Structures are given as structure tokens and as C-alpha cells.
Image (cartoon, rainbow, N blue to C red; front, side):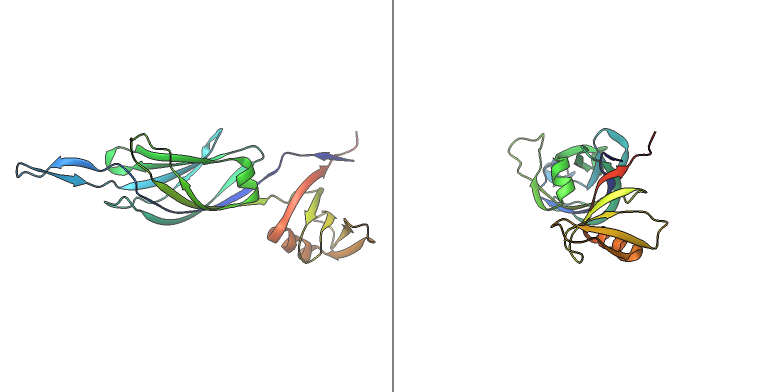
Length: 199
């Protein structure tokens, strides 16, 4: 007997950078006129509704076009959103802009540039990010695989040396080595449901 489950896995995140950030303030330079002070931006990524699941980049120094190239992984569950907030380290973490990715965007993967919501008027800033979601392979999972095996269902039992595969086009069942199925799942697989113990 199988039951549908809430998808769970890891989001691999690459926070590349941002451009055209606001946050430049006018400061006295000691000579009766003012100069601009650029922000020291960093980015915080958090899983919405999971406040302890977060990561952040290093700070960039005196720039409105930071390049972080920061990679991290966070545990996510179906329905979760990712929120990215760019803050100014020089001003006690004051927000410079934020943007969110929906669960649909997280699950299908995203690679591109997004406009930031800014609290400052007349500021159009942008944030570049790449997100890849990988399902967690659990005991008793019924898995959909794509690629090398075609499109198949795999009844995952980690204690078995071989895994039975059922082609979705109605072809005969075949067997494959556990290691090959696991590699295919990591490359492009989805957990459909898990086996429920009979009561």
C-alpha cells in the first residue's frame, strides 16, 4: 500500500549577486561638503515558515553591485517558499531589497535575475540566483526517473542489490542495479509516494 507524501529534499542555492542597489547616503567629509557612502551589502536566504533554516553570504564592501557567488544547501518541504533579503552591513543590517521564489519555482528549478522589492523610492535593483531542488530518497519510496532509463517508476528498497523498474509506457518490468538507480535519481528523479505499513 502506498500513500502520497509531502515532497521533501534539499535546495542547492547559488546567490550570485545584485546590481543597482540603493542605500547610498550623503556623509560629511569634513570640508563643508558631502560625499556619498556606498552600502556594504550581503544577502540572507531563508525558508519561509522555517526561521531556523537560513544561510547568508559574506558582505561586499562599498558597492551597489555586489558579486557574492555564494553556494549553500537548505532543507525544504513541499509548499515552502524561499525569501532572499539584501541587507546593508554598514547600517546594522538595514534591508535594501527582497524577493521570494514560490514553491513551484523552487521545485522546478530557477536560474535568472529577479527585480528586488525596495523600500526606497525610484530604485530599480535586481538580484541573480540559481536554485535546484533535489528530493530526498527515503525507504519504501516509489520514484519517477527520467533520462537513462526512459521514464519509469522505481520501487526503492535500499537493502536490495537490484531495483524493479516499471516503464510508464506499459513495457515489461526490468531490474537495474541499486547504485545505477540512485545515480539516476540524484540526476533527475522525483519521489511520488512512499509505502505505508499495513495495519
